[in-house]
Image (cartoon, rainbow, N blue to C red; front, side):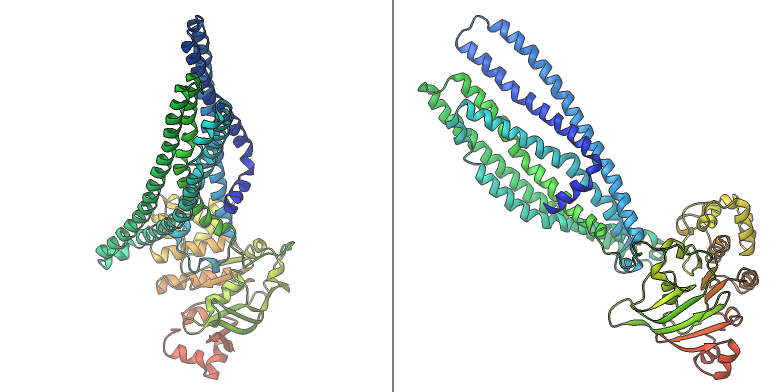
Length: 575
């Protein structure tokens, strides 16, 4: 119930359409309740041989036709406006979930698969549409019908009405038991669907690896297993639903049997007129329709609740990298960076960085070196504020990163990372991605600096070439040069190069390095690289080992001291 209230509150923007639908539901109810009264009136006239029967039948028939026309109109209004509200709410909800995903830190994604998240954004929100467009309106409609018919039944014959309600407590208990039993099954079905989506996304992204290693049968078996598990969970829920629906139908029929049996006795002994019994049976049929509909409505609600729980898990997720209530904007950034006693871990008890204290002056080139897994990438992730330090503080131009807006911080930094991501768009748009509003000529100039212009011009469509998903149509070196061009065009005071030339050949690396020398002028640059040629020119080399700063200095100073840096160089790790 708490979740349903949360969903309905979230949809307040569309309450007006739901209110219009509610009014239409009232009209539909009135139309349905009117028909048995007509039959009751005509039956009464027929039993009494009333000479006005033909004239009255014509009049009531015309009225009934108008009532049914009103029923059709109200039914259309109810159906359209509930769906209008539901689908617009789902669109808003998907946008809200995506917005929240953009604001969550990288920590949130450590144990999440892309397909799982996509399943929550698409499949689970679809189930909420069922709640808004079907379950809630149906509950309201059937509730109004139940109340209206119950009142009329007691007006017609209180004794029969009381007898017809004997099975209601049993139906109520069955509904509660069903809800408790079926919700965990629907919840499990949604989880399995998320796993299926996640595995599909992984496999489609890794199709090249699947084919290279001939793992077709293994991956087919995994997907088939997921699909069968999801089908099994759904069928388990549907089995309960079938039993529930049959039980509701049976106990509803028992109520009708009691009324027919006792109603016949009452008519035979003159305790109730025939017209009343006929009307009573017709109303009773209407009365039990909402009860038998509970099976479907209850199933819809359990599906929607299961999906809603997964959606609101994201919406209610704690944002661990938060802005202050009134953060200020960084302006005229010089690039003076300080790490003050900074420690960080991704999981408790496994520190990645320990008590890091270092100063990077404006315009300085600093290289981070060390064995794999010592925290080099984590160092720059903290500077981008993808995470916050567990201890210590990081400042930029004297401002703590926690005091400034994330937008202004990240607008001060250009990143070139090893794992280049390109959107399925043109080369020009990918290059301009970090600098919205840039012209094509500016993108071309940046490409020349990054030595990307030559290969782009060789393509049939040049800068209008679609790169494919994740840049599939480009080689690793081409993608890296596009990434460098993007950073050059972005033109920010802080430049981060994380293995920026790892995927290019030595000659291209030399050309890019020469070009980047000009780009790095008057910029604070943090470099992670495994090529000595890239590191040697750094003003300061920070040697990281086991999460700590083991040494610091220029290339010549570190070589002279003969520590870890010299060892790494001698074993060609930095060749």
